[in-house]
Image 1 (cartoon, one colour):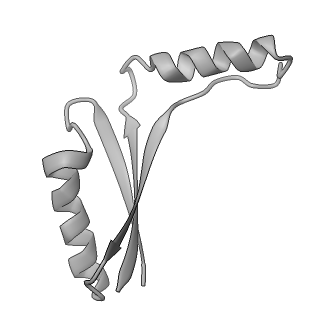
Image 2 (cartoon, one colour; image 1 turned 30 degrees about the horizontal axis):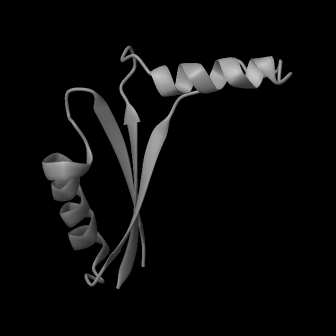
Image 3 (tube, rainbow, N blue to C red; image 1 turned 60 degrees about the vertical axis):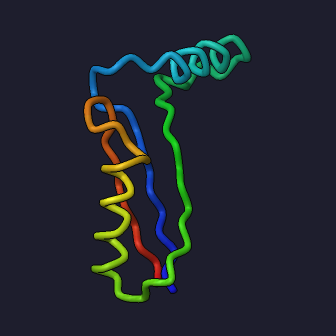
Length: 81
């Protein structure tokens, strides 16, 4: 069994209204050291597959088919046995 963590985030140059709103709110709350905020999604998947390479390939397919939009998203996959 493997735990797979998939982080989905916007590509550079794609508008991030959620990140912008959070940035403004943090600044209004007095967190002046914040210089930027980017939003992302995190998916924690538990797969019956124990082979790391196969689990990664399965997660890649999930990203291509559902979890990420290749036009606006990049993603990072981490497999933990």
